Amino acid sequence: MPKGYWVSAYRATSDPEKLAAYNRLAGPAVAAGGGRVLTRGGRVVAHDAGIAERTVLVEFDSFEQAVAAHESAAYQEALVALSDGVERDFRIVEGID
View 1 (cartoon, rainbow, N blue to C red):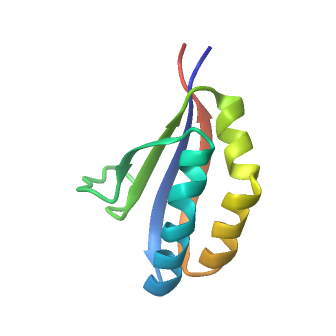
View 2 (view 1 turned 90 degrees about the vertical axis):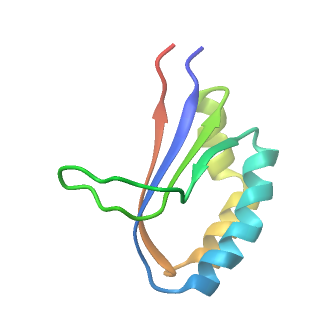
C-alpha cells in the first residue's frame, strides 16, 4: 500500500506567534494520526519558481491515514490556531508503492 505524505511549503510567515501556537498543537495531532515528521524547516535550496522558505514533510503509512489525520479534530484545532499567520502551499500526496 502506498504511503501518504503531507507536503507544506511556507511562502511567508506573518505572525510567528500563531505559527508557534500551531506547532504546539500540530505536533501531537500528527503523532496521534500516525504521522512521522521527516523534515521541518531545515535548509532549503529552491529551484525554478520555488521559494527558499520553511518546508515540512510528514510521512504516513497510507494516503488514507494522511487524509484522516488532516481531518481529525486535533489537527483542525491546530489550523484554527494558525489561521492567517502564514501563507503556505499544503498538499496531501500519495507515494509510490
